[in-house]
Length: 380
Image (cartoon, rainbow, N blue to C red; front, side, top):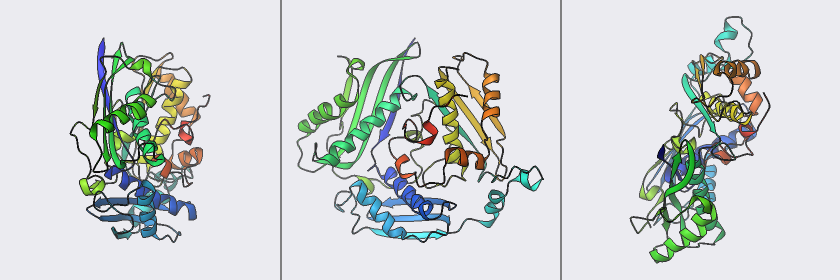
């Protein structure tokens, strides 16, 4: 049976991703000086202004405004007339400390209070988290989101290197893959929308994007005469970033994960320290799902964890291999329970999450990057 599936990605200059990057930059700055920092940092950007708000409890003394401006500069925004200028934009701060009611449950888990002696933090909130892996690609990610991320990253590479000198930071990509009997066989449609300087010839832009971005990323055996290309389909894209559209931390959760190919618990990642299971448990769920596939137990694997605020152990663990399992799913669950400590403290220790590693996760997906600790392959 043939079917089409589509995923999208965005560049680091997309207004929502700009906000994610600022929030993760603040988080890294805190963790660099105080690994036990509690951070829940949210950013809003629009029309020459950036607001950083949320709760930070940390021994680190950081210049948040400087961190914000450096993050905007790193992305490449320096023009207030077309997007935003890191030198002239207004930076507003509204930061408080973590609620003592939440801290009560995080500092010492429900189990420890009841005498179970887990010696673990409690979960920072209730919630559900999903992890996923499949054998579409070498990195065990779905092909549509993998290609969309690579196209978005390539847009940034050719802009920053000067290979396509007229590009600006904002942009989006989208890839539709045709599947036959659950196997990806070809790319049906590619959409690329990229911000550019005002006086660029659009025919040149389309030619450059096709030759220097798409053909450099998408394997030729996946392209054919029926593949459709939509490059800046609306034409002009000069006004971008937070001048063209407001940005907000945590608004690209499907881009951050599996491109819609797997379910999502609803929690965003950026700006949150690892005591927040929205982030740390989602990373652990990906790690385990990837290793279920990498160890040959199934061709696809989706894992769900659920947590209660202040409670260390997950309330539930769910495994779905979509009928591709080579061993019983109950055995996979037993292997998970026997191998991994899924309390917040156990996850943080196992994945070494108190380091300032989060800026590198912000863009082009939190999964599939082999240098990240939750992407390592193990035997279990």
